[in-house]
Image 1 (cartoon, rainbow, N blue to C red):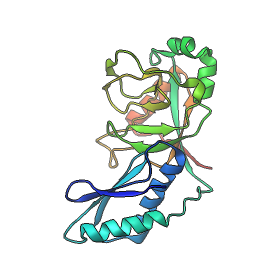
Image 2: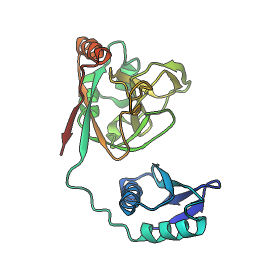
Image 3: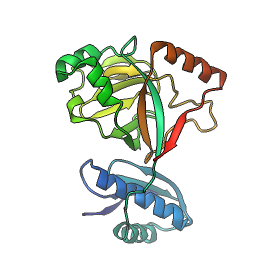
Length: 239
């Protein structure tokens, strides 16, 4: 694997593990982040994982560029990336169709699948969170069934509501806030992936998994009320 360590501004380095999106490369990214946390290297202030790279910010008064770049290069080539025997899965309730899935009927035509088949396929996968980006709390997920891959909309929507669940190309995801967007909408979740009023505003973390759980429209509003009252708890499992 061709590993590259490069400067990113005057106080950050980026370690690239490849030039494609796949799970093996992403495992390397998270393995390096885990290794750096274990090493507790003085001067490292933040780490941001992406599909294929890790951005490492540092305090130049505590560690130099040259020293950190050598350390990152050595550690990156010594990584062990055996997949963990157990991983954290966050169950995300999703109301498919109803007022949230404006493109579900179009998805039937594009895929040749029935609505029930689309929902079954979409909710039968544990999706790995490769990275977060685009918007605060927006998760980039790996694992979408190829039968559900469809092109993005020719003309993006000016506004997509918070919690919308969509598919674009070979990815699926959740809009954490009102936003323009071009993904095809198949449902919506009442769960807030981003809430600036929470102690930890971003709900999910890169490296975790999520599993969509189909719910009815009445379940959606019941859960939403619980969230507003502060009584709702996510279902999280270890597998």
